[in-house]
Amino acid sequence: MNTPPTDYENLVAATKATLGRIAVDFSPAVFASSLAAEDMVLTDMILRTGLPISIFTLETGRLHAETLGMLDTIKERYAYDIERLRPDPGAVEQYVENNGLNGFYDSVELRKECCRIRKVDPLNRALAGNTAWVTGQRRAQSSTRAELDVQERDEAHDMTKFNPLADWSEADVWKYIRDNEVPYNPLHDRGYPSIGCEPCTRAVEPGEDVRAGRWWWENPDSKECGLHVVDGKLIRIKSAT
Ligand code: SF4
Image (cartoon, rainbow, N blue to C red; front, side, top):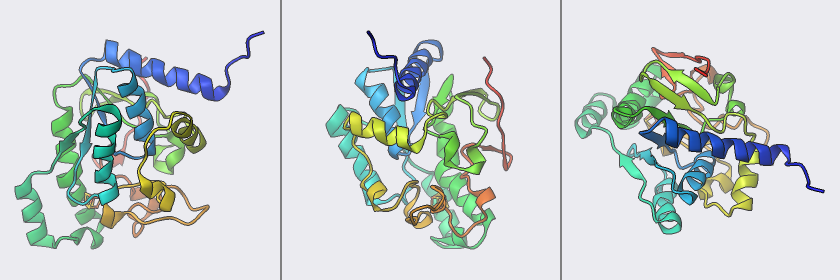
């Protein structure tokens, strides 16, 4: 007698089906990878089967050496070069001149301005001309992601946004990584469940919220970098299908 698939196996199958559907029905599509554990699950699924979804990362100029090292690790493992999107050097220079290299500690506004220059503007450039984009966000990651759908309408970019791991738990992510020997950022083993830019990310204590280490000096409700925020507000538009 056949053993019925487990919830985890159904989740993996559904996620692979979503990625396959994106590749066929939403071409050209791109995957914005932060090189963190969730993104490595999607990277593995995309590259193992050669799905035509291009992968890029936002190389902000402030990433940990360990995060940058993942680019070489991915190249060695999958023979794939992740595209690196860098900020406009003139805008970075102007920001540093006006506010200092670490001006983002001084106010939420200056932090968002830094994120805009180093992340949001390069992201907008990367998304232009595509039909859909993919993220590794999960609903359980934080209160600001509680209403995440697998498929959403991204009005700001006038395209479809997919969060194929929206239903995954942290345990599901790590089960997939271990079962499939997926390489991952070594910072995850040093207390960093969520990894962003080096000066804006700290390790968390056991039991702390997974995103407590991101922009830890701010109010939890403002903890998004703007990549999934429209006009300063988190917009959650229900799936188009
Ligand atoms: S996370 Fe920090 S360093 Fe990175 S872009 Fe945002 S404010 Fe700047």
